[in-house]
Image (tube, rainbow, N blue to C red; front, side, top):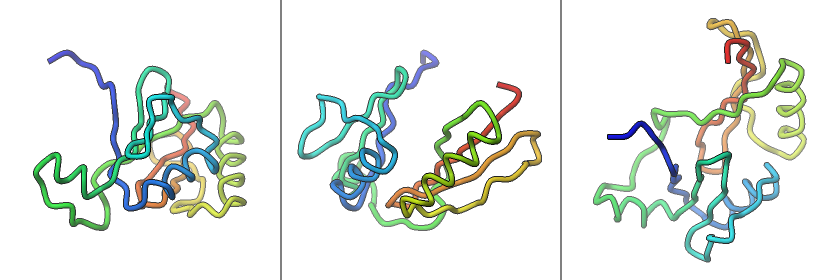
Length: 130
């Protein structure tokens, strides 16, 4: 299999709430490919899509139940510790749940985590090694 990822789809409880979070809180622009049933955001050569959780589970033929840690995180890397602090403060001012305050981390970088409306975790990090 070719080493490539094209699309990440998040199953969400309320498509409009999640679309508003990514569009209004994070300031991302919807792709014209979006419809009333699925929302796409183009991110530097990869797409993030939002789709109804129940419908996505049905498509994959799995149970939609599940809670707690999902076993993955998404990441947004920035160029400095100050940029991490600034973004987290901006998100906090918009009512976003900050799961972990910005701090130096064991691997030599600086990071924080926030949650989207479905508790998908986003790491905001400065990685001096990238």
